[in-house]
Image 1 (cartoon, rainbow, N blue to C red):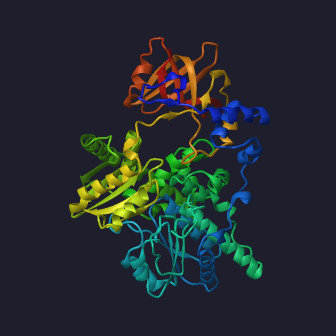
Image 2 (cartoon, rainbow, N blue to C red):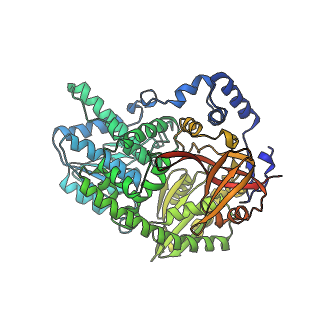
Image 3 (tube, rainbow, N blue to C red):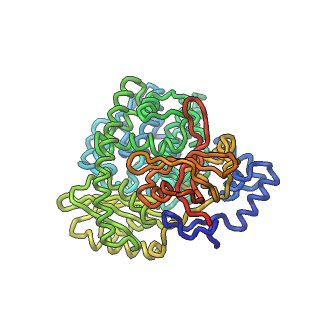
Length: 582
C-alpha cells in the first residue's frame, strides 16, 4: 500500500493511508450512478454502501432496522413479568450501573413507569464503597421492600447477589459478556450471552431496555388494546447511552442515534435541556456533543461524586431539580478533569518506564481515584495504539479499568484471567473492561494479560496510521457539502467521521490558543480560505511547525465541521495532522 500523498511520516509521526484501489473505484462508480458529491461517495464506499443502497443508508428508518425484540432470549419472559408488576401495582426497584449507559437505562424505565403512574425506586451503587454491579447487601435490602428488581447495565455475572434477593423477582437487562452459566432469576436479557447468535452484540444496555419496553408495549396492545407510553420520545436517552458507551454506530444503533438526536433537538426532557445548557451547547445536538459534552458530565457523578446523580438528572420531570443537578455535575466534571490530569501524568511516566511498545501498556498507583482510571486508560491507549490497563491501589486490592484497540478483544481476556484465579473479578466487552486484583497478584496478572494480548497481535502494532477518505480542495469544502456528508452519519465508534486531506496549501494565519491549541487559516492561493483548529497541537511537533511555517506549503488532514458564530455558518477543519508538501 502506497503512502497517501507520499506521507510516510507526518509531523505527528504517522503514516497517511488512503482508500485502496477497490474502494476508490467503488466511490467513482457511486458518483456516476447517484450524482452525489464525490467526497460523500468516498465515505459511502468506505462503508461498503452500493448505489442501490445509498438512498436508504442516507435516510435510515428505524421501522426498517429495529429488530424483533423476541429474537433475544428471555425477552418475552422479562416483559411479561414487568407488565405483571405494573398491572398489580407492585413495588419495583431499578438497580443501575453508575455510568451513562446505566443512567440512561434507568431513566428509560423510570420514565415509562411514571407515565403509567407507578413510581420506582432507583438504586445506584457507589463506585468506591460497593464497586460495579449488584452486591449481596444491597440486593438483600431491596428485596425486603420490593416485589421486582430490574438490574440494568449489570447483573449478568452476579450469581450470588441475585441469589441474595430473597422474596423478590429479578430481571437482568444487560449487554456485558456473559459467563458459562447465568444467574437464577426470571430473565437475563443480554445479546452478549454465550448462547446468543451475536447478531445484536453491538447494542448497549439502553437499547436492550428500549427493546424490552417495545415488547412490553406490544404485549399490552395484544392483551387488551392498551397503548403504552410513547417510546419514540425516549430515543434521546437511547442515543446518549449508545454514544457515551462507545457502542459501534452500525445497523440499528445508527438509526437509534439519528432519531434520538432529532428528539433531543426538541428540548423536551428537563435533564437533557439543563445538561445541554450547562455544557454551553450552541447548536443542534450531534454525536460529538453526546460523547464529549453531555456524556462526561453524566459520568462525573458516578466517577467522583454521588453515584445516582446521572440517573436522577435524566429521569426527573422537574426543570428546577434538573438545573440544580446539572450545575453540580458540571462542577464535578471540572474536579474530575483535575484529578484525571494528575493520574494521567503519573500513569504515562510509569508506562514509559515500563515500555510503550509491549503488547499491553499498564500502570498502577497508590490511591489513584477509581473514577478516572478508565479515562486515563483511554488516553494511554490513544497515545500508544496498544490495549491499556490503569489500576488504583488501595490496601490489599486494586481496582482498574482497561481500554482496547480494534481487533483485540480485551473483555474475553479479562474474563479468562478471572477464571484462572489471577483476578478477584473482572468483566466487560471487546473494547472496555473492569477488574479487581489482589495487590500481591498484580504483576502475575499483568504478565498473563500481556501474554494474552500478544496472542491477539497487540505487540505487532505500530503507531496508528492516519486513515484518510479522499483528497479535497479548499474550493470544494462548503457548508452544503458538510451537510451532505453528515447524512452518512452519525459518526463515532465503528463508524469514524470522514477525514480529508487538503494537499499543498499555504498557511495564511496562525494563533496559539491557551497552552496547547492552535488556530490557523489556510488557502490554496486561488482565493479560497478555510479556518482550522488543532487541539493539543503543542503536545506534538504539529503546533511549533505550523506556527513557524516560514511560508512553506503543507498537506493538512482532519475532519470537516460547520462552525456557527453570530448566526452565520462557515466551514472549519478540525486539524489532526500535517506534513510538509514537496
